[in-house]
Amino acid sequence: MISEAEVRRIAAATKVDPMVIDLDYSLGWFLLGMRKTSAPLRGLIFKAGTCLRKCYFPDYRFSEDLDFTATKHLLPTEIEDWITKSVDWISDHDGPDFHVQPIHFKVVDDEYGSESYQARIYYRGPLRWGGSPRTVKLDVTRAEKILLQVNEKQIIHPYSDQVSFDDIDLACYCLEEVIAEKIRAVGGQRRFAVSRDLYDIYNLVSFGININAVKQILPEKFEIRGLSLEGIDIKNIEQRRSEFERDWERRLNYLVISKGLDFEKAWQCVLQLLDDIKKQ
Image 1 (cartoon, helix red, strand yellow):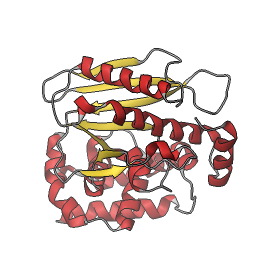
Image 2 (image 1 turned 120 degrees about the horizontal axis):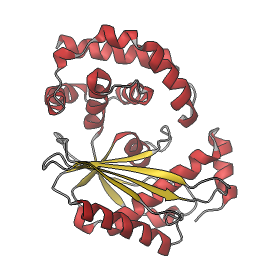
Image 3 (image 1 turned 135 degrees about the vertical axis):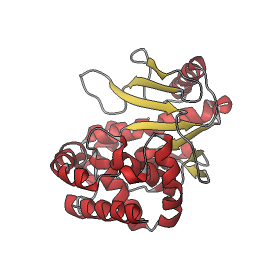
């Protein structure tokens, strides 16, 4: 495990709280442990914001959770056993301490074909603090359908023990699949305003993803969750601007390395994209 001094140096260089770096480092180690012990669970596909940070863009915003889509039926005991083996492997290889508190595991949905599980794994990383252990939240769901090609991507781990991560790949959503689910979240799936969706949509559009490929899969992506493109209510979304802006200040800014992107630019980009989708 790296030193606390390294965590603090990187935090100062990236202008984020050292706790953010401590979590990012520990997320990387959990992914490594998962990959080293996941032979029976090859059907898990990494997705969402942490996937962008850990497998696509090294300077992307930091993220806090691990999200996976399962492509085959998995029993709760299989998931629990895999998590246990992962944290045991990490302990044996001098990673963060994921044994500080019992893992909390929950079955969110046990209906066949829609199985969803959530785990909270408690840890202490290289940063020393006297409070309660921090948590990694892990979500696994089968209530999703992957419609585009899955990519094998190497784990990005910008720390001095990077050699442990050499040639370690994860099965990941492609960028078009990531943004499709982000668009669905803003377009009607989420009850609450989550500004990270805006940030991710803006950045992926700016990166130059294949927006036509995204538009082709959106109808089915929406249908999977009982939604439709026709149901996107742009006026209602516009009326929630203040909710999104507050969330941007409270739950996003502290995770962003470069503070150059302001809310307004991302907001207008997303509204324009939703309008284009409605007109297609």
